[in-house]
Length: 70
View 1 (cartoon, one colour):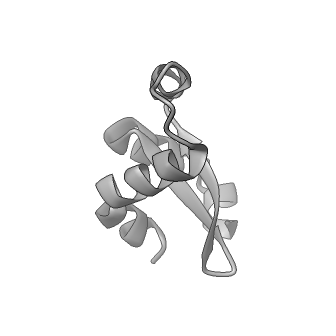
View 2 (cartoon, helix red, strand yellow):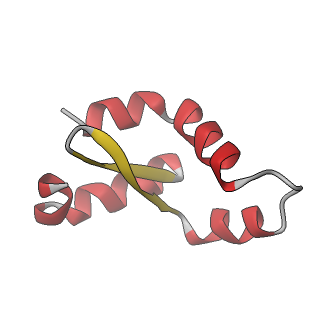
């Protein structure tokens, strides 16, 4: 979370490259930052729950999230 606060442009690039980024707090996922266009499409998605969508995004972008957590 500290790095995201001090380096928001890096977080924005991760979102641009991967569609989303997760901010960790105390080494646990706390915040999900998502591209606005993706957000709009998710609102009209099927009956998928927010939790299911988050899990799908985490799995899709796990490599980027692990890199940003370093």
